[in-house]
Amino acid sequence: MQILFLHRVFPGQFRYLAAALAANPDHQVVFGTMRPEGELPGVHEVLYAPARAVHPQTHFCVRTLENGVLDGQAVYRLAEQLKRQGFVPDIVYGHSGWGPTLFIKDIFPRARLLCYFEWFYRAQGSSHGFDPAIPVDANAQIEIRTKNAPILLDLHSCDAGISPTRWQQSQFPAEMRAEINVLHDGIPTHIVLPGLGRLCLPQLGLDLSAVEELVTYVATGMEPLRGFPQFIEAAALVLERRPGCHVVVVGEDRVEYGNTLAEGKTYKQLMLEKFTPDPSRLHFTGRLPYAQYVQVLQSSSVHVHLTYPYILSWSLMEALSAGCLVVGSATPPVMEMIRDGVNGLLVDFFSPRQIAERVEEVLDHPTRMAEIRARAWALILEKYALFPALFSALFSAPFSIL
Image (cartoon, rainbow, N blue to C red; front, side):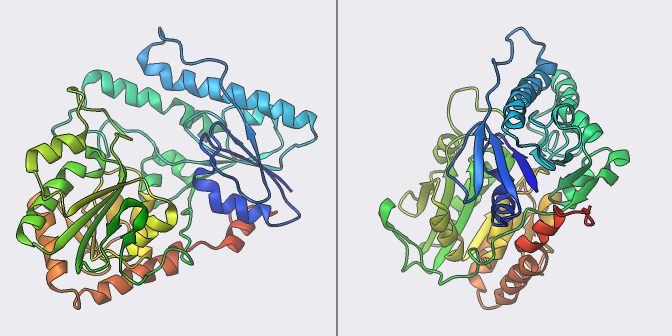
């Protein structure tokens, strides 16, 4: 079987699936991408690039669509090259929203098109409008509505869709949800599992192996959508009250989602100026190699995960898989995974004081929390562990799963 993956950033959500399929000698796996990072055994990477950038005079409401069309056109040209070389996929699996899947049915009409539907944008009721300090004005409302255009085109043309969680699937129009199957990407539980609990990162000059209380936080960027301001305020309270406690923050000092600060500061700079937590016990690691990131989770006494009602972060699932005691925001993506007092603790996203209190509750009662940690790991093992055989079956004739 010939299988084509499409994702702007290699390998994205398709890392384990593409590798599992490529391990089968009966499959030929090609991966179309704009930005390759590393390689996967047996997976042939091919690059595409749009012919130009979005025109500066394009109306702001349709820039996403124009960008998607440009990406889709680039993939169409790539597909023509593959076709001339004898590669005609039986299955195409692509990430929807950015545009690479838009014209697949035009170039490969007989291919089964599967789309990964990660998010459907809404002006109210999810990430937008959640924070009262960031209102949604009229321009933002109409831009958000039209931002869904490439996604709606994919919903029309795909043979089946996949969304990783029930919460993310629920954001799509009700009449279209039947086309979208809920299937999580999967967590590599053979790698991310409870560990020894002592953190030492020599390349950073960071040795916390003797620390008894370690609070951890992970996010791609340090920004409001992932609760970074609330976390720093809470961390400052905890560090003030507990002289033996240390805090480790994994992530880059940038904004991944949303807007940057108007005055040019980063949110890290703003929050450290505002609350001045002890710098000798607050450690920023930047982006870490995966094995070292897992070590941080395995060493955590309590892991804080905060988010707007938005896409579920892999880091939450990985923290649960590592047996972390997670203090998470009582927002829909987190509440789909965590039941308060059962396999984690829930807090008000907007209450740094409550976040700090629940962190201290964990630190004060480590033995009592052992069962909660065990249930967190059990959830991942039971429902979200990576099963390459299952993924292979998903893409095998006669597509019985879908």
